[in-house]
Structure formats: C-alpha cells, structure tokens
Image (cartoon, rainbow over all chains, first blue to last red):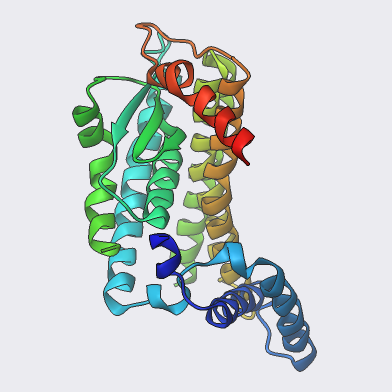
Length: 172
Length: 129
C-alpha cells in the first residue's frame, strides 16, 4: 500500500510519458517541420496511452534540481568505473593463464526505493566483471568474474558502495 | 577544431573496435555461459558505445550533420538501458534451467536461495494467484 501512495495521479503520469516519448522522437528525427512534429505527437500519444502505467510511477515529482545535479555526478562516476572495469576484463581475457575465479555472491542493499534498486542493478550489470543475476527484496545476487571475498559486507564495499553512496543522496 | 574532432572521433572508433574484438575473444576463451555473458555483453558495451559516439563526433565535422550526434546519443542511452536487462534475463533464465556456473572454489550464494526458499515460495505465490 505504501508504494501506491507514492504514485502520482494517472493524468500526470500520462502527460509525463507523453512528454518523454515526444522528446525521444525529436531526438531521433532532429527536425521541427510541422508534419514530422505532428506525427511525433500522435505516435507518442499512442505509446503513452498504452504504456504510461508501466513507464513511470512518480511523474514530474522525480525532477528536482538536486536530483539533476546528482544524476550528472552519478553518470560521470559510472563512466569512470565502467572504463576501469573494462580494462580489467580486457586484461583477464588477454592473459594466457586466465586468472579468473568466478562465482555468485550476495550482499544486502540499503536502498528502499525500487527505482534506485533498478539503477543499482543495471549499473552493476553494465560494469564488466560483475552482473546481477537476481534481486530478492534487498538481497542482490551478483555473478563475479574474479571473486576476492564472499562476506556480504565486504562484497557490498567492493561492488555496490561506489554507486550506492550517490544513489542514497539522489533518492531520499 | 576540425582536426581535434577528427582525432577524437577516430580514437573513439578505434577504442570501440578494440573492445568489441576483446569481447569476441572473451566469448571464445571463457569457460561457461555466465562468464561469457560478462565478456560478450559488457566488454562490447563500452565498445559499441564509444564506436557510436565516435561516429557521431566524426559526423560533426560536416556542417548540417549535427543531428547524427544527437541520434548517436539517443542510441547510446538506449543501449545503456536495454543491455543490462537482456543479460540479466539470460543469466537468470539459464540458472533456472539448471545450468551450473563454472567455479573454482564452489562459490554460489544463489544456489542456497534456489534450493532452500526460492522455488517453493514462488510456486506458492503462483498458486495463490
């Protein structure tokens, strides 16, 4: 029930998804000619009509100045971590002996917001060397290419903390 | 300015090509489906992203082609959103089809969940619906 109280009203969610779909359309067509824009309005209207329920829960409430700032920080931080991890996996693949020790580990996340958990899971997956196999409640199951520890607290420090310290600021 | 864009664009395209190659090499060399997902989907993520971004930047050199850059950004965001979901679904599906992960030290926390609580609880939930 608590989750439902957070949701924005249906027309607002509909308007929000219409706007987002329309912006994506503008990004793809990159033109302001009248027929193109009208087609875009119509297509994004249809899409928003069918998918607003699954597309967004908050509507415009999620957009705040502090959130935008933390998103930028998060994206930059994420790109840096991703590049580092990519070189790490490249090193593993290129080493003749293949120094890997794969396994599935778990840790508990401090996040409560479902969107924040989704962002964390997707970031872990996009970082090479780790990916999310499943999320049960607050427990994340992570397949790790080069396991160094199986203690949940240590795993949390190694994998999740760089992302989560920013996400906690963003989503509270 | 044009020269800087040229160098930056070709550098990104080259980096992308290298990472895509390493992703392919990883698929051949790594032992099981889960590790191969790591190489195949992840090493190629940065590869595809920087390659597409490089193409977008190279197109910026010609006047009137700035829209390529915006399209490249939209495609990169789309990859960043869809790639993790597909690899997560593949891994979870494989695990539930009882494909064992290849491990050296038998590290498998997910097995405990599946064997002790998961499947029973989930099938009860399905019955209740």
